[in-house]
Length: 148
Image (cartoon, rainbow, N blue to C red):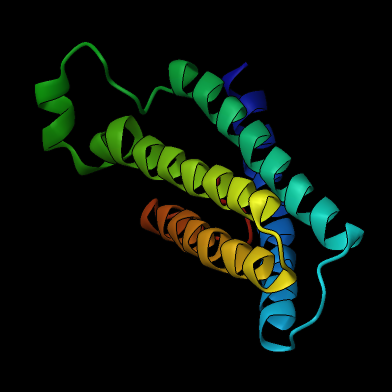
């Protein structure tokens, strides 16, 4: 079960990174090019949000199956950088990223004009993508490729 969940979680990250990169590029082009927001933008932003939430749920399930997470002795877990990363840091960073994504999507939906829609997505999705990439990089795993 653990290997399957790890493979699934690792595979979904590509979908998340691609969708967020696309949403961010489209938002920046729309913002700086003063282009109107359309249905395609809305769908990419929504699919990005959904993929991040699916990834979070997969990660939370994986969290309880992982041999790298230690709940029984948090003192020892905090002393080991690898166990500390997987027990505390990775999940905290990813939950923070999903909060940024959710807030950004909500602000984009509530914005009346296209500039503010693009600005909300560019700001919040951009920050979330940065947090996600930092969390992946900090793990020692490659962003592209697999080290399972």
